Amino acid sequence: MFVRAHITTILAAATLLLTQTTPSPARNAPLYWSIYENQILKEQAGQNDIHITEDEWLANINWVDAELKPYGYRMVCMDGWGDCTQLNENGYRLSHSRHWRHDYAWWARHLRERGMELGMYGNPLWVHVDDHDTQCLIVGTDIPVSTLKNPAEDARFPWVQVNRPGAEQYVKGWIHFYADMGIRYYRIDFLSWYEDGRDRWLGRVGPERPREHYATALRWMREAADERGMFLSLVMPHLHHDAELEARYGHMIRVNEDTGEGGWTKWSDWFRGQRREGWSVYGNAVDGLVHWSRLAGRGCVILDPDFIRLNTFATDHEKQSVISLCLLAGAPVTVADQHNTIGNNLPFYTNPELLELNRDGFVGRPLSTDPAHNDSQIWTGQLSNGDWIVGLFNRENEPQRRQIKLTNFGFIGPPRVRDLWAHKDLGRKKAVSVTLPPRSCLILRLSQ
Image 1 (cartoon, rainbow, N blue to C red):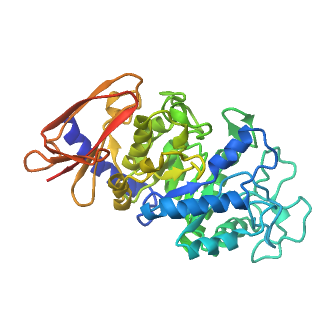
Image 2 (image 1 turned 135 degrees about the vertical axis):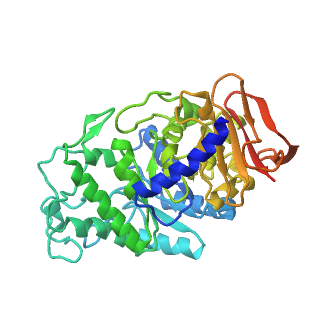
């Protein structure tokens, strides 16, 4: 009975979301590789002048091209670090590092020639020019970019003052600038620091701002993105008022704290069950995906559990659980393992039966959106051809029993059942009851 009610709720909630937000054309969650691990390892080692070298960058591109692109991973994405010393005449960043021989435009062309794409990182509210610079002008105006700054503002980043002349042109110009290179993915970071200048761990990192300034900035970004077909990934958002603004203006929103050192602790146990106010509402990816699943659905905002470093997980069960939950939640699979750290983990990223969910645009939901409830560890959802996916998860440190009736999914008689990790047909079943090992999952496909 509960499963039938849950299925009805999925359809009703999706209809409600379409009336509450400004949905974009249907987009599937991206499958891509990020430089994140390369950079975070250097930061953790205390290295100065952190950047990915072009040799490291190219070696990973070659690896993605050979091993991941055939499975749908066609984008490689920048992340933080590097430097902002190379700017164009409008104050926009041209390259990841002063040590690079080639700029972003060159790499975007190179990747297109290989059937791949460049994804970008940054924030169009950042102003990188000096306080008194008069050479860089806001695109389409004769207004110096430096006039958008408030040098007296006590903030970790130099932010655009959105109520000043030229602010809209500058913010939208960032997105147009990258889109005109052929870039279609923009990962926009540190949004909470702009919104109200508060950080859970660092305290005050900027000024308190009127909420309408944040709303205006997000609206400008979305308008520019829609003009150029850019995908907006909103990172470090407070998600105040039930993610009202982020779900309206973003294509994808982060739902947990940074991956950092990775492993099961950050994925499932970090501040488990603690709902907080502001970034990040939940500390770990599992809690975040469960709680915010009520906003997700086909054509709705996508949930982002941050980067994946499978080489930091201890067991195959853990790795299967991570990839499975991303794909059942309709979330991205963002590979951060590198060509020289991946080890034998590639098959977890390239399971064709699970990746079919991403190609289909599948978005499932847990039976409960309360991370403390056991039903939050059972996910279901329907593929476009009418088949159903059932995910039974055990995020605990001891064996757990999971069970679900399969007669409430609309099939005539018991459905045929297939195990998507074992790649094995299990016959027709009325129900499934299984004892799952610690930190493991069972992913089933049901068909007539």
